[in-house]
Length: 522
Image (tube, rainbow, N blue to C red; front, side, top):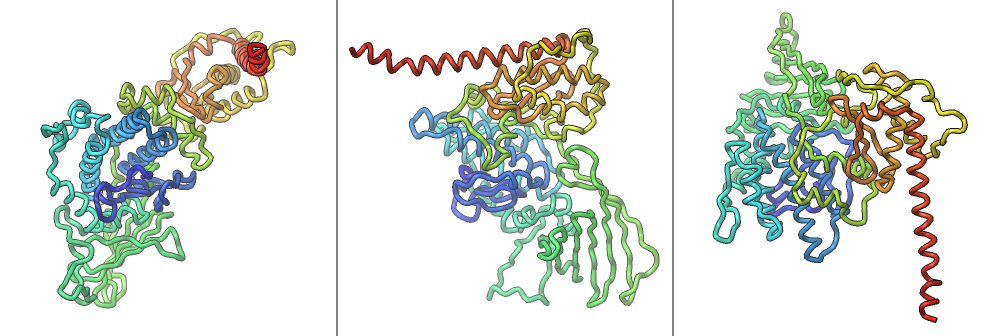
């Protein structure tokens, strides 16, 4: 997480330890950031290890934007910044509360993170945010384990501090932090630790009278095994330990999704259990690198295979809910993900102010199209629309001609959405008409910069364009196809000319101002 996610208590990570590739103070893309350093485009391209990591990645996106846009130390600026930080926190907390992890690794981090961020907000955002009231109104009870908060006479949330500290300390001391940040996804991290029983995990580094840890006395039956990346083979991870009196070595090939768990009796192999994965096909399973594993065990005798492999129950990819994000998050994400090349407004925009005021802060399901490559097929069937007559749709030579910038935006639209629209049964002429309409909309809102990406809504009725600056702009497909391509271009060119005339007028007025001032002085 970004600079403003600094720890709120002493110790490594404070109340907010690291998790995955994005959660934790001064941490993004699986690496530590220098104070004030902005995550690079390469950092943002690192795959989250699972749903919770993806949630915190969006939180990082919002915090990075806030740090760049919400400057100033005057009271009004500080108030707006705290309100914006709280909206980012609320979006993250809402996702966390709606997710009920079925595994001990995510469950422990989720518990620590929810408590930590609400405590941080209640401490840091006063007097600009009434965290207790907003929690009770918007978030309390989503998960029954996190009910409404009670407030002290001073209005602060009443926390059980030992319980709050314990959540984070347990997560770090048992090795869960090291496991989640090792470089493997959540599913594979659990496969490395199939011997672990939730609620019965010992500290990763046990203490003894002389702080020694003799190999002959080692027992990892209730300790986490942390995968280590092979320096010579970046896609290979290994771990070793002593479980139930036997030496165990685990080897995992990330590229081929193959894990082998070898159990030794003395120096000889006793058994080898192989997990061979097939990549998950659902949207989020693919996003996190999950797989469906076929499992078999080969027993050995005297170091040699004994009999045929025994097929064991298969392991399905972890189920994850859809990631929910606000319109604001969706709008700023493409820009922030450019890292050092991102462009930010000098101050918060009108859309930003609507967002941080809470009017549109509630997260909504993200359209899958926004996370998919442009040529990904979709099963949406658009509603029938009335299409303008084809005759005359190709502009004649004397028709208004688009500027190079408008033509480039139309081509970008066709490159990104053309194949998908064609799969839905649209003709080339219809796609050209929508491309002209998209270029017209970009021209209409040219003050927000060039379009970075075009999206098709889940119901197939709306096109959205994300520009350099928010908010997201949309237009209705049926209405756009109700006009011809020629008309869209005429309107786009007229819009561009009016904007040029306005700009020229401002330049002339500015140039005339010194003469006017001189005459007034005379």
